[in-house]
Amino acid sequence: MSTQSKAGNGVERPLSPHLFIYAPSWTMVMSVVHRGTGAALYFGTLLLAAWLIAAASGPVAYDWAMWAFGSWIGRLVLFGYTWALVCHLIGGIRFLIWDMIIGFGEERRLLALGTWVLSGVFTILIWVVGYMVK
Image (cartoon, rainbow, N blue to C red; front, side, top):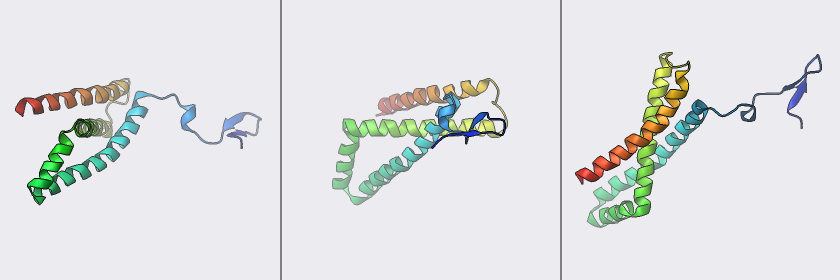
């Protein structure tokens, strides 16, 4: 099946736009990451609910939950959840800026890169402060 169509003058044109004809840009990648972090937050919130249920169920269930979240795999999941939360928040702020019809010029790339960089910096900062308070 061909993805090309012949126009009346014999010129081949694509039947419909597809991802493969576009070069990936930072705004395109961050849009996909924003959707992915939203989905990850859904599953991470289920873990948060499980922790709250364990806390309400008694000391045995709470100790088990704290052991699970305190293991290296649990901390890695919590770090990912923190990053997803911060990245989704900053991405939402970027979309809010775009909703005000600001940032569609050359600063588009800077906003997308800023989302990526700031989410990493803020996530690390949150974990550092968390360990300092502990």
